[in-house]
Image (cartoon, rainbow, N blue to C red; front, side, top):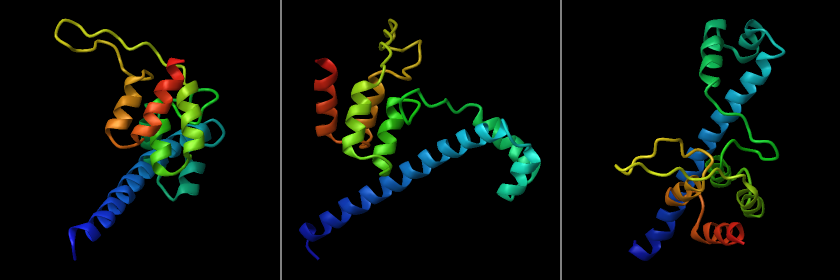
Length: 152
């Protein structure tokens, strides 16, 4: 088989692999958020019976879930990076990812110290969109459109 015929298949496999990985990560976030929400109205024993887990396993899962940030009001994600993950996973389309990234309430990017290190978190900054583009979660056209619209 020629390299020309192999390339589309290779690109398709890469896209499928990236989509599957992002689905896994977004599903894990949604699961942990659902666990936290359920803990407000169900006992750990009820949750364990429902999920086919032991109560100690539920307690451990709830403990891990506490680290998951809550969704930002008006959005379906906790960060711009997660918006891009949801797009890459196929949970939202281009018509939704662009307006969400344009409307995101970005925090200012912290200044680097004299060693080029950031002392504050980059969470919620434009840098998350840059990272998402670098990681292939969004394409250059989406990045450019969002950048242009946020600059206006």
